[in-house]
Length: 275
Length: 323
Image (tube, rainbow over the protein chains, first blue to last red):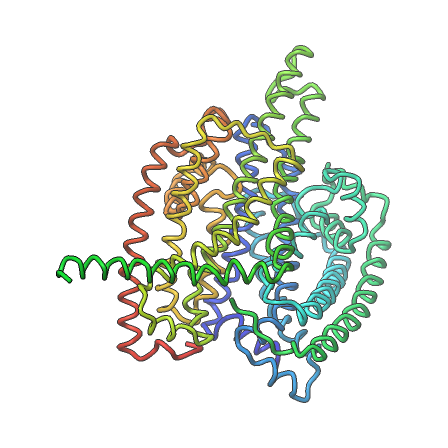
């Protein structure tokens, strides 16, 4: 029911095809920004280009759609119910788990993101000559890593949602900033080796870095890019993602409960902070 | 009192009233931000990370290009001598700096564009939702003074983020700017802001008409506009992409930030940056177009506001929420 509600609110009760189009235009435009950045790099004295770096960037950016959509779909729930629709008090006192309700609301975002990722990848292969493919024997590995990656993202989103119980309407700053951390440190657009040592250390401490790496290994094998993660085999990365999803799930429950507790104590559960 | 004196006194009082309205509407934005220091972290620091990602793309591209040159490949031929290698490496470094500077400037302007979308264009709709709009409509000041105050307050809030982006670019990423004509640069910057916020004022009325679609409209005008207006790359990069690239570039220049950025990049990187081939027009021509855009948007905003107010009153929707 919450997923259906999430779809209807997200789409503003419009026609499904119109909302799908809208959901695709944004990420595809994001991909186009990178395409043009690469084009300008080629035009400014690099006529041979760097197809390997382009494929690395394109695949990473396509899967980043999951990060942006899942995180936004999770942590904006509290603020949208509280600040915009001002319905949080009614949902909150209803006899359901608010945690599960948020997961349900996020589910529709994950579904739309999946569609946008597929469209973006197909566009890259068909029109931009991005070198990638999915071998049949790699399908289970791909699906397994995808499920674990999304589980980690949902758990991180709920952690942020727990914090947003206590903050003012910073949801746009959070929406830009938190994915920005992953965009910068997780080797999404460029290999970790481009970052300074301390930045690489942060990147290696974030499980999503490994998710992006295994996704690229499956979809764009044989790349000449040095990711500095070659020492980890696929099984190790899957295990790491599994452990991370469990740890973040535990954290999300703890942070969500703590945020809820302090918000109730301070009378902030249904505050509005418009100015 | 003569008729002329009465008119003059009336005009002075209206000017005072509207100026007070401008200050009154700008005040909560400036003070609200100061009362809530967490705003600085969320609105000024966190967004820098996304911009830094784009900077590192060019850093990574540049590093790989230099690696190739050091391996003995000077673009399309084998390097003939160490001197040639040094020349090509220097050129690659200069290009990388110019590209990174383009991203930093674009990141600065992104702050203003987002402010225009979320705190100008959407604002009257939000005000209606929270019940303030009817109070504004009953107050005796001009509605443009209200929007002007919102714009000024928004510019202050956004300048903090814009300045932190610029400072980060210079200090952390070592971007070099060579400002040859500071007066022209300032003129382009401020005219761009006036045109941008004029556009925001116009959108504010339209969003009132579109109602609940406001949120989606703003969301839809982020990445597509970043792309079409060349926020993270010189907009002239679209031209070699054929007819569709030229069409997108032309469409992108309707948003004043596109032309403003192109002019500012010319003025801080030098007109010969990128071989001089990625600029749309000269900075002076772009300043002229921006001036026209500023006037057009402000006039349209005035008319759109009056029309929407009349329409909303006639249809009785001025205070009805969630529509």
